[in-house]
Length: 53
Image (cartoon, rainbow, N blue to C red):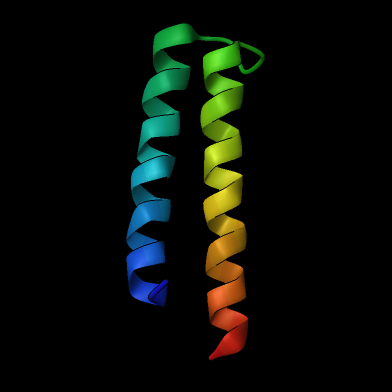
């Protein structure tokens, strides 16, 4: 995947994490954890793309 596309996906996932956390209030809520894992996966993908270039 393209590095810039991955970075855009990271930013969207980060914003979504803030929204989910604001809605559910607890960092341990399953929805917050799920979104946090999605963001982690995207950050790992971005790091992989970045290291290949």
